[in-house]
Image (cartoon, rainbow, N blue to C red):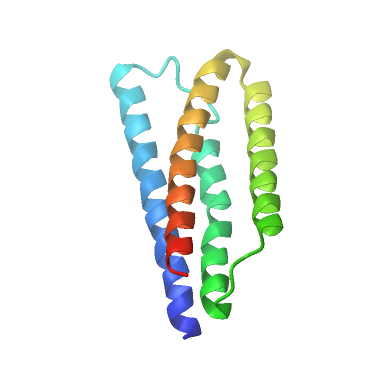
Length: 131
């Protein structure tokens, strides 16, 4: 049973990983096609951030499937708050390190953030429907 739960969390993480890498390839391809003058130097930090943030929901799925209990609302909200704080820290550091491409960095960061929120929302809806 535990092995199936781990596989479920791992398969969800692999879907997230493939999705983020596909989006990164698309963005890099667009920058390559239209010129790299606006390419943020620290662009790879954005996908890495969301790959790291994506680990938590997948671990939550595995843990939830093992114990068959619903996570408390306060733990879910704390988790969201920590993700937002971590994201804002990465965003601010990225802007401060590369001020010439700050607007492009912010736009890409917001695109990835929306993409991740859609993924996480679908995941939580799926998780709540199974119970």
